[in-house]
Each structure stands twice: as C-alpha cells, then as structure tokens.
Image 1: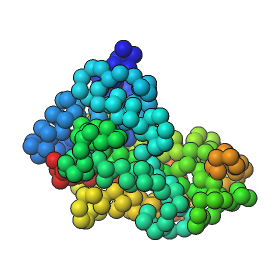
Image 2: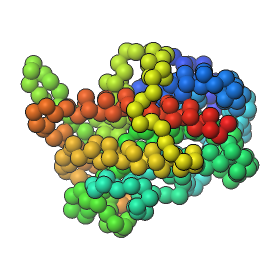
Image 3: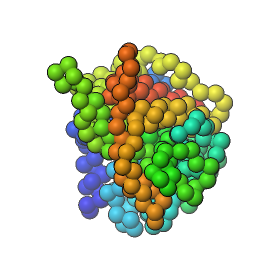
Image 4: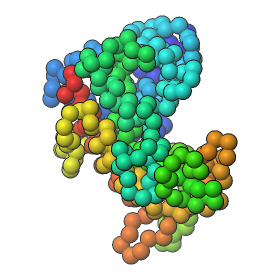
Length: 339
C-alpha cells in the first residue's frame, strides 16, 4: 500500500516545481523533449500509451524515486507501477542493482574517451544501459528479459538516463593514488575514485562586498545535480524553460550513426567538460577507504582564475543550461528513431 501511494503521489505532483532541484534537471530534459515531440504526434502518442498517460517530464524522475520501493514487494497498481516494481525486484538483490545503471566513472586526469580504456567502466553502466533500452524498444531484445526492462520501463529509463549522461560528473571521475594525489590510472588496483565527486566537499568563490570569498558549497556531485540547475534557470517554470529551449536547436546537438552508438558519442562529448570540472579545482585532505578502494572524503577548492576568467558557479551554470537543452533534444530524436 505504501509503495502504491508513493508512486501515485509522485505522479500527481511531478509536473509542478515542488521538488528539489535535483529532480528538476531531469524534469527539464523531459519537458524539452515533450515540447519537441508535440510536433510529432505519432511518436508522442506512442510515448503516452507506453507511459499510461504520463509525460516525459513526469516519467524522467521515476528511476530515482523507485529507490523508495521495497525489494521483493508484490507489484500492484496500474501497469506502470507494476512494471516499475518488477524492474526493482529484478535489479535489487545483488550487483548490478538498478542504482548502478545511472553513471560511469571514466578517469578524467588526462583526456580519454570512453572506449579507450576499462578503468571505471562496467558492462552495466550508463553507456551500456542506454543501448539496452533501445534494443528493447526496437524489439531486438524481448520484454521478458532478465532485467525486466519492458518497453514502458525502457522509455522511463531513457527519459532519466538522457539527463544523467548530460551531467558531467555522471560520466567522469577523478582517481587518486595511495598518496592521495590525482592521477590517470591504467588499471583498477591502486586507484581510488571519487565517485563522480560524491566523496568531495566543494568550496567555491562568492562575491561579498566586491571581494571574493571561499564558501563551502557542499558535496561536489550534489552541487552539479542541484545547485547548478538552480543557478542556470532560477525562478523560471519548467514550461517557460521548455518553451524557450525546445523552440531553438542547441549548437552541435545532432549525433551520427545508429542510435545504439549515441550513448558513447554523448559520453565522449561530455568527458572534456567532466575533466574541466575537476581541473578547475585543487584537492586537499584526501582520505582513502582502503577496503573499498574509494575516496573516503576530501576537499575540492575552486582555483583562482585570471583576468577575464569565469567563477566556477557561472561556468557550471552555463554548462548545465547547454547540456539540459541537448539532453531534451536528443531524447526526443532518439524516441522518434526507435518508435
């Protein structure tokens, strides 16, 4: 009963701006795609049928919300809720779990493309899961697969994953050696990753009475998930942002080749930004978790920029604004291609 209430409560509220900005970034990707698909009634109708009437804006936050679902519960409710619970049950008892599908951790100390190495990559990571969903929608993989990704679940996941893959720290990570110094690892042993900034506390400059002062901005990854979206879009409603960004194509948004290759292309395109997101910082007090081979904690300080340079907050907001727009346009194009 609790699970069904959570899902229905989510569906009733998701279209308004009452959620934390972490959800808002995903909502905006979906809303921009909804705006684009309004010009393609056939695809839009297929999407709505698969989603039980939900919009992509509404569906885009569900893959995070199902963290509240209990592993092993009996599926109940409408067909969307039942399939979401089936998906959770099939991906919650051992790795890979559904929470592992949202990211990849490509080292960013040096320039590197996704396919150029193996460190930080998994065969169930974000770059692999997007093509898996595409295969289901194309009918190349049966809906009764081991992961229980039906066509409905595939659309829900794509609405979310196209947001994740356009967030730089969902694709790139900094790795540290045994001395707590950032480096480019060639193998997993001896490399401690920051989990896309999740283990680092960010300190950024803020202007106070015409002077710049370092302030604690919180978890680095969460900063990119939430505060940057707030900085980029402020008080504008989702509809206002979608009307603006869905009406004019962003530069360099189109991709080449079959849609099954798009995830890796997007990852390669955003890795330089993930690298810069770390290069603009200096690291201190890096503590290592030897048992899990992860960074336990650390501090990331914004470096001072020279004349004409941009504060980290302003630069990150510009990045997010562009990437969310690209995510929405690419989500719409992908669904048009496979549906």
